[in-house]
Length: 425
Image (tube, rainbow, N blue to C red):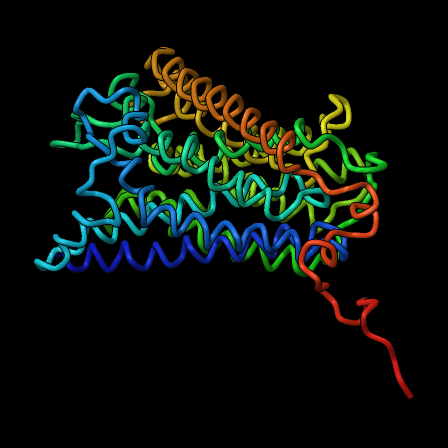
């Protein structure tokens, strides 16, 4: 494959990943009340706009600062930004000379940043101020996502061996092909922190709000699944055998999780649901993200089967533990990301404990999960708490009960329910 073809492959995958954010907006939008659908979708759309701007201006410079140069665990990108990387200057210069691969890679990584921030919003559905969410999103991307992306993605490989860069990969030896720690664990831990800061919705109880639009949810799942093929296979940065393996595993794990989630619902609750099927597919996609290039397809299928049950059970724990994660970001993304990342240490090719390679890699995976989870949770809680105590993060109980769409955005998702419209004979 020529370099030009590799660049084209990465460009196509980038477009697929970017499409995931509107897909997430559909998925989340269908799950909330009809009076909150605009607010919910706008948090994804707002993330797309804001994080896209920040990535171009300085996010890339922070995430990919000084690979292998003794950096302070990826944080020096915040304090000593490489001016040559601001506004994508270095990769733009390369593209002007005819080599656009690194510029395409920068764009590809930018789409990861966008979707990761948007994922968090599901935990605070029905009760968050849009402006405060945007402040949180900008600060979170700057202080959490951009550095953590550097911990994993900012590395170099020579003859198949990691030679420098992201400290969790280079120094610790974490294996994370497409961002199970960066995207899933970080967003899930941050979602838990925000859910605790904002508190429970008014009248919080099991089954308090049924999804208002099931077809919208399934459309979102379909778009997410489509984009996830670009997310995982594209992380190989070339259309080769490894990308093909990642592609097949991105099919195998979700179908396994879909089946077991629906079976769990049937056994435990008596009826299988389409929402459960969609949630199962997403849980499988989450779990396979870090491990998609390190598993034989049969173990990807097994991972999906396990995570379908584990995540289905995990989302019910919020009622036991007493935190209100509105759209189950913690139960699906945090739990699924943890299981998928640790699974490498159990069944990964050439490293898995059950293949006779010992528990060393499992320990490294656990360190990666623990570090990212703790860092993301603490920073997210602090940022959210400061916003709540200053400009306010949560809407009033009156606005929450009435629905936040009209209050926050002056519009509703369905014109027929808009009280500003009256029928005249």
